[in-house]
Image (cartoon, rainbow, N blue to C red; front, side, top):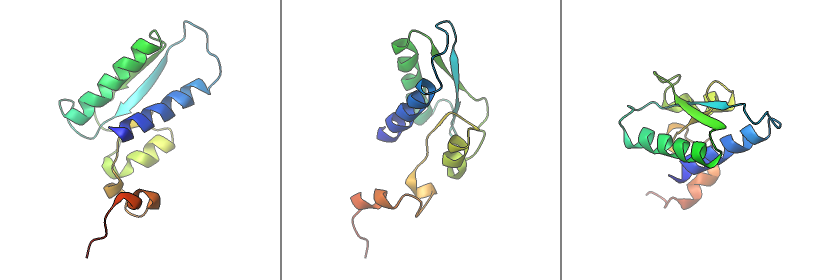
Length: 109
């Protein structure tokens, strides 16, 4: 859930930094989910999107892609490269990429 919030905050910051669009303009964020639409992960992303849309009076909306643009291991790169706007991944899909995330792990022997 924390990862979803961080990704969402980053997406909102990116949308806000695009400049001041006209009040009637709407930003549509493409949501990539590599799990089924009925999965709790996808449901929580869409619930977050609904809360954002309500908070900004409909100026930002989310669209769940009908099929995943990329699978789980490529989600971070696809989001960073602009292929999708929102996505969720796990550190286990990208081992060694985010070394600071290992701080919370206990050593395994």
